[in-house]
Amino acid sequence: MKLKMVNIANIRGEENFEFNSGKLSLITGPNGSGKTKIINSIAAIESYPIKSESLIKEANKLGIFESLINNKENEAEIEISWNSIKKHLIIKKNGQFEIDKEGNEKFLYSNLLYPSSRLHETIKQKDPDFSWILKELSLAGNYDFIFEIWNSYEEQIDRYLEEIEKKLSNILEYSARLEDISIEKRSLN
Image (tube, rainbow, N blue to C red; front, side, top):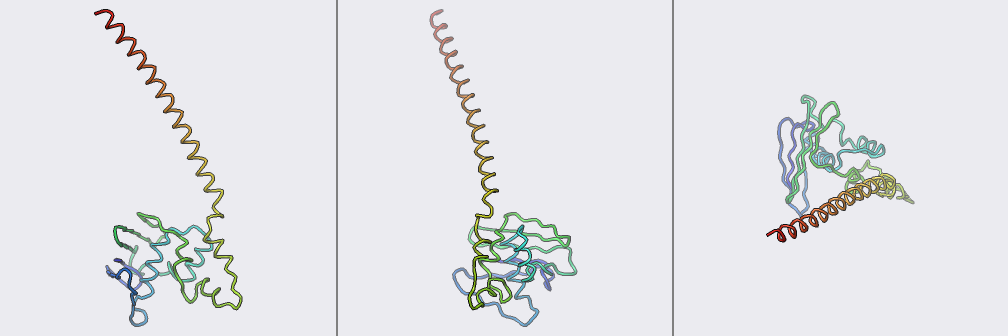
């Protein structure tokens, strides 16, 4: 995996990192050298855009988006690529962003384990209750939205089928007329 970061946190300009696939990568360095910002950059590009209020709170709590942009710059850029997949994200100081491939906001719960994360805090409890994560990761909460999309596509497909049937009917009608004209032409010769 290759990671390119431009104007991220204390990094001004471009920094590139390469991680070997299928191997454990160790990120070392003194405090303040940018280790966490590497992880936060990956989390940002894999989870942007975040629409869920609880996930926005979690991202802010973990500092994923806080101070991601170098304070002397107006925007930051993150690019990640592995195999044939490439993602590119530009985050602007005014909160706007440009992303070529949307991530999955649930990445924050399902792929990251920070000491201050809600998942880590739940694991540390004597009798942990993980029902909240099932609710967050489940698509059941999106059922109405998904159902609306499904219905709109179903209606659209029905309209297309009607159009196809009309055009097919016209084609058959024109084909029959053409056959009649052809027969009439032969009889005249």
